[in-house]
Length: 121
Image (cartoon, rainbow, N blue to C red; front, side):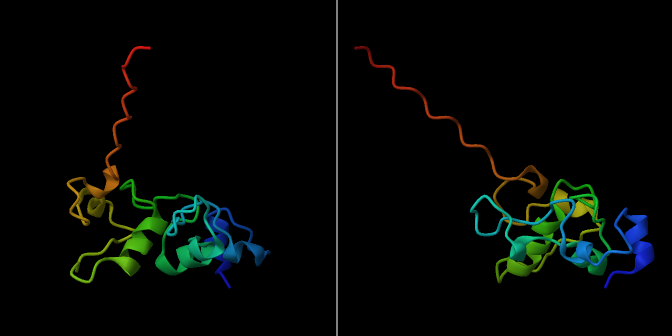
C-alpha cells in the first residue's frame, strides 16, 4: 500500500491500488536484453516509493542513468566493485563504474557502421 499523500503528490490515484505495481515512467531495465521490460524488470511505483525516487521521472537525480538501471547495477555489479549508485545523487553518473572508458551517463560507445563493399561489377 502506498501512502496517499505521496501518491497525490506525484499524480497517482490515492483511491486505486492498481498503480502500486505499475511503472508509469518506464524506468525499468531490460536486464535480459530481449527488447521488452518484463514485470520482473520494471521499477514499480511501490519500489519508487521505497527508494524515495520520483515515479513520474525515469531519472530522478538527472544523471542520465535511469532509476531502474541504477538499481540493476547496484544488485548485479561485479564482486570487486564497491561503489554503487544513489538514485538521489546526480554526481554518480559522472563516474565510470564499469571501467569502459565512458562515464556511465554516456553509455556504451556506438559502433561505427560497416562500410559498404566498394568493388565494381
